[in-house]
Length: 276
Ligand code: G1P
Image 1 (cartoon, helix red, strand yellow):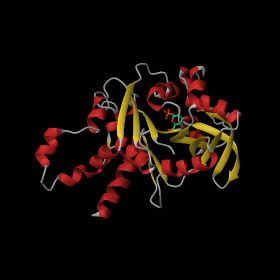
Image 2: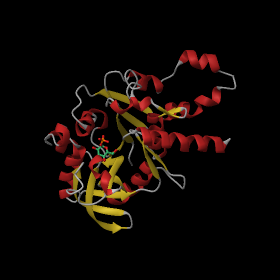
Image 3: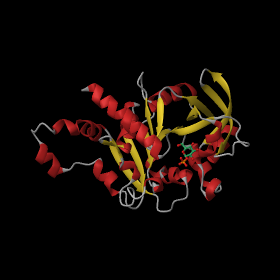
Image 4: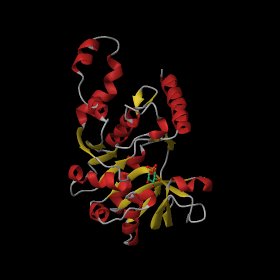
């Protein structure tokens, strides 16, 4: 039912400078695979085959990554190195990729609004590639959310409990638990102080959005940090009873921070070693 997944990928990645000076942060690898490829694999596993990427200046290598490299293909064809390309070939074969540029950095809400031309009038997933999610016990986080969409037909945000000292890094929700781990959201606030926070349930970088969100974003004023926030637009939908929050199964690594990036690297390295 959800066919499209949007990847906002225009940000600067300042926390990883100088590595991200000329390279998109989404191309930073966890072991041997760029962050954005993990995200696209998760989208594909959930049934999305139309991948829409919001890029910006200096992001061309993302487009090249999801395209054929004829020279490389010729070099390694028939050699024992071919297996390295199996994963990316499968994705390129099964998905279409479209791109649009966000030429001003006016926040995540603005990035998502920029994607309207690629999404059109249908529900869609959003993946923030620097939140790398792994579910060892079953389906990926976006697939879990797509299942939920089939039941609730409304916007969905993935959440997890965070330490109260960390609430000012996230969108925080307040809601009523209607099923185990599923909340009807009453309100949400972007990066509140510990005193302001209505809970410690933090939104992570996985959303299912409904097309109404675009009209709301168009009139959402700049919020925290002077940026147009998706959390503020979702708050408008929440007041109409159209947002649920879902405590997902699996683990999320905050690869936008050096600590989370290193943790994910160690975990994924072990997985690759154990699989051999
Ligand atoms: C964005 C959202 C925030 C959300 C977070 C998840 O913030 O604005 O609500 O909790 O992603 O990673 P950012 O991390 O881009 O500052």
